Length: 306
Image (tube, rainbow, N blue to C red; front, side):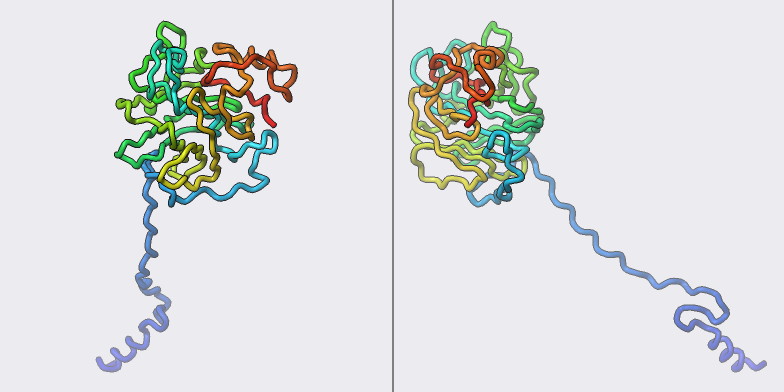
């Protein structure tokens, strides 16, 4: 066979549609792999600035709302129940019981878990109307689980001690660590401190707000009072509290409005949650006790719900 015939015969045996006529497979064509989507950046809890333009969570549906107590916030969010933004004058205004009244340090905000399941507070943030790094009051919760009906109180903490000489002195938490246990000095609430270092970093008595945001920076619950130039954040739940210069403002019930605490029926300062519940004739009726002090952080009875 001549060389030209051999070449022609060999070419006829070559690939037709990717397969040798002789049955030998050809090398598969190279396929470019699909692009790998970029990974979403991690959200550092509490680091995302909260502004009125921040996207809020989707609206609650009737199915998502707690039918049992008509909570304004859906699971798994906590509910703001009390705020002391204007500390009264005199030593009787020593809200954190360290022996000294402080106009900023004794301020506090109280939250509760209105749901029938535990909730995780890690990364939730409390802020006021001041912008970041310009006097903003800000606190980010550490990892801590709040049981159903549980209450947590966060103090401003400027120049404050904690129940000196009392059992609850050593179990106060902060943004780095959760409280070791419920605090007997505050009706069994879990107590934390913001550890504010300047007395100027505090809520304004004449007009301000407490904004609760989740770990992604979404505004969940805003309680505001008085007048101020900044817009009220577009949180999922927005409520207005009255001006109160001689008392804290507290919810009348889980789903009720805010009112001056001096207008509420509350247990005497120092009464335990068990004593409060024992005094109530039934879970559907609030305890018929004398009017309490102007504020009692940690006390909030779901039996008073409407």
